[in-house]
Amino acid sequence: MALARTCERAGSGQAPRVRPFPVYIFDVDGTLVDSADDICGAVIEVLASIPCRPVTRAGLTRYIGVHLIEMFRDLLPDYTPEQLEQLIGSYRSFYRAREHRATRLYPGVKEALAALAGRKATATTKATAGTRAVLEKFGLLEYFDHVQGTDGLPYKPAPDVVLASLAALEARPEDCLFVGDTAADMEAGRAAGVRICAVRYGYGDLAEMARFDPDYWIDDLRELASGL
Image (cartoon, rainbow, N blue to C red):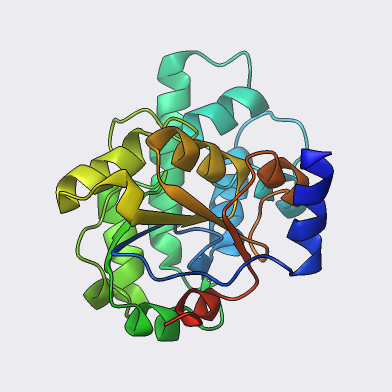
């Protein structure tokens, strides 16, 4: 029954208005920017030169937010760890070369970040340098007090990247809202002890996110500021 109520809330738009928080932590891909075309395009470029089962953009989208090594291991289970690392290096080269040309800000992102008075950080599977580059490209970097990528940390759904942002801001979990678009985000936030907010417009499965009973659901990032 609890899951049924949560799923209904996820689809009905009846979630409570978001209260203000002293600290906000954001996932990036699927939450702040729609980067699927650039991410999936770079993966397809990598796979085009090696024997691999056919893949499509739609099929690759489900891997967004998953660490690259997990994605390539799933697509190429016979590859050695060394070969997988080579693929990751190739991906990063292709992704940088695309210069985010097919990436777009989601509606209302800049307005929401400007309106929120709380301190802000990221918690993403991207590397910190790549995250900073994306934020700078789209004029978002000025709104963030800390930029945190995975950088050798256990990746979501482990809570480490969220906890790293909390530590950098010297913030308490109870003062923080973590905003993301996947079940891995929701699980990481729950494990970190922060409040969690699920966005419906990203790449995640709503039913999977609902399993973690998010404190809030939103369709537009500007809803974060609606309670101010």
